Amino acid sequence: MTDTFQRMWAELLPVGRSASSGGYRRFAWNSADAECRAWFEQQARDRGLHHELDHNGNQWAWLGDPHGEGAVVTGSHLDSVPDGGAFDGPLGVVSAFAALDELRSRGARFTKPLAIVNFGDEEGARFGVACIGSRLTAGVLSKEQAHGLRDADGIRLPDAMEKAGYDPDAIGADRERLARIGAFVELHVEQGRYLAEGQSVGVASAIWPHGRWRFDFHGEANHAGTTRIEDRRDPMLTYANTVLAARKKAKLAGALATFGKVAVEPNGTNAIASLVRGWLDSRAADEATLDEVVEEIRRAAYERGERDGVRVELTRESYTPVVDFDGPLRDRLARVIGRADGHPVPVLPTGAGHDAGILASAIPTAMLFVRNPSGVSHSPAEHAEEDDCLAGVAALADVLEDLACQ
Ligand code: HGY
Ligand code: MN
Ligand code: MN
Ligand code: MN
Image (cartoon, rainbow, N blue to C red; front, side):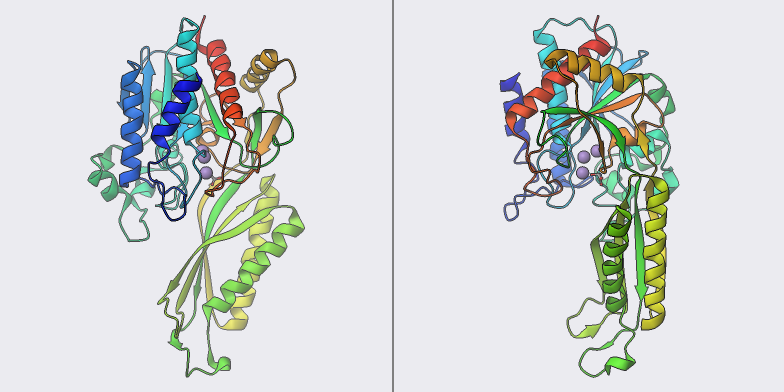
């Protein structure tokens, strides 16, 4: 197990890695994404698995009949956030192939079809909506909505897909595929420190509700050197106060609010901006708190805009309701993993969104987390120790054996 894990990891590690930051730039349909996809297909072929590309741009590596009932599916994503870490996504895909290798070395007899999946565009780094591949498959993102998405250079999602050789008119819900799936288990590096003090592997209890909102602050372009302060309608001022308000409101409510992305027009040092666009990522343990925090941030932005003579517009770009993994599949995972190493498996929530969170509305779904000592993620500093990764592979192999083998 160790050597196949190490080999795959060494192959994937350099793909799409920035020499300057050490972070990854694997964005939907770019060259690094294509390289990752080619790597995935090679892993499938090396193992005699049937490689399938579905009409939403997700990759599937099948052992057994792809049209068989009750398939057991595992995997994650290979794309990254800008300058993201090496583990977020790839750990779930590499571990899936390594777990299959482990089961084959045990002589496991599969009684159900098994698939390893790479979901396309999970991070939404390029087109702004997360989990596009799994959302399209689950039917929670329509073809029309997807066709309306553009990247920062104005390139439309369908044009990017077409350029990469995919048919953008074929995208859409894939309910027959989902109806044939008996269980989906996603292994993922933990993006937090719940496991840091304890064990290598935990089981997900829930995914916090979360969403993305775009604030447009419309001001008035003018000369930075000749416009009196009292004559300005500076959207940067309203934006800055909204960022401060977001931090304050979230802290008070025990929620999370982040303005991590901003666009300024005309973006000149000696020009007062005409427009500032700020993207808010907000999350909370429950939907009522999340809705309340976002409403308070909206109100603070509008009130400040009144003072500054800046018109504020708010657009909700995506929203994922709370995902509760409670149920027989999670209990089964906890039993199988707990049995293997003799003590109860930690069960933990996460504020990070996942393809598993999207699919949970359609099929039995569960998640395994692997310890991340610092908890840091969406950063080149993201890390997991090899021992913990291998413990994750062993746990995943035990779970797949329990679900898909005699
Ligand atoms: O944003 C998230 O939570 C996930 O990493 N896509
Ligand atoms: Mn991520
Ligand atoms: Mn991820
Ligand atoms: Mn994910």
